[in-house]
Image 1 (cartoon, rainbow, N blue to C red):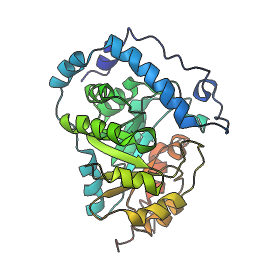
Image 2 (cartoon, rainbow, N blue to C red):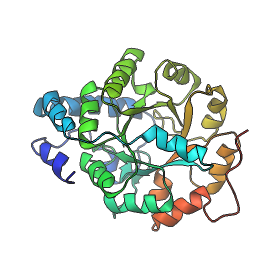
Image 3 (cartoon, helix red, strand yellow):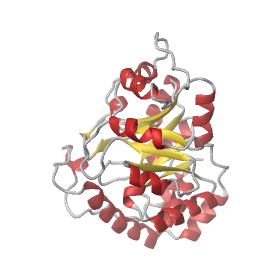
Length: 305
């Protein structure tokens, strides 16, 4: 698939216009004191309405018909764990509301190659523009450069976005339970399953976990970052992980910076992780991945209890 194909479909889309200048645009971190997730979702709904008016679902479906089957995202993670390793999702993002500008020298294809060389299992690519300086073409370029399955990391609120995700080549989508009602989550999951996309349902507390478990997906992400305040605490995973049924596959997300963090979580049975900012800030991304998961170290993956 040519790297510029999806971007060419969107060339008539006007630039996103959030209500105010976003931290990602200025390079500053987001101040505390308001609900960050609510603001992002409000802006996302406006942006999606613009895109839907310019690119019909029928056009996306025609594009999807020409694409190969998705790469198995969840299966890749499970296979990595079954083989005695970690299922590591490495993230490609230029900026974030909590960290501001993360990586000025940003090349999604080269980063994807470096991650794969370091031992990543899957990729996560930010496509949100106003808050993360992401773009659909970042996902297209990253996926074309490697053989790894790719998660589209964005705020999925409308079924149209799932057709868009499949059309740009995503293998998995993220559903943030804090941003969705139960009915919305079910509808979005059904759309994803119809398009053969995996779904990672993200939770931050026990109530959101209960809601996510009502979905069919086997992939549950525990986000250590509170998306309303942007505060991060690894104990979120430590507290929620024991509540997960054995038929669900857990991914720990956010706040994971060192091999010691990996070991701390692994000691409780966690075997899959999504890591972004701490890797994106490293000059040698390949080496950073290898150090994070302990390749060539004296700290083997602990056996599953």
